[in-house]
Image (cartoon, rainbow, N blue to C red):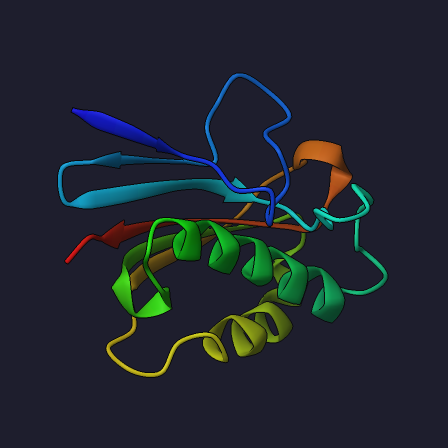
Length: 126
């Protein structure tokens, strides 16, 4: 059985997908980009602001499901430029306290809305 998770505290999907889907003891959170859910505008002034907005969007979806970053077991980071890896990695790390999730980071040629970073996560529901 699957359960769809939706919150107004993260951007609405821009296509035929859900913000997150809970299947059994796992929550699959769709990739988030730096759209400010209040204004609907992209927050891409710089890679630091952009990454923080992505992480806030992920946090909002996790919270809607009753979870936190402590529940995340796997994440995927997509970058348009691997040259931003160190900055994104530093900010990403600020949202986790210990027992970091498994992760991969890949460079892609283009991301939705021409953003610089997109992150998706899988969390365990305890």
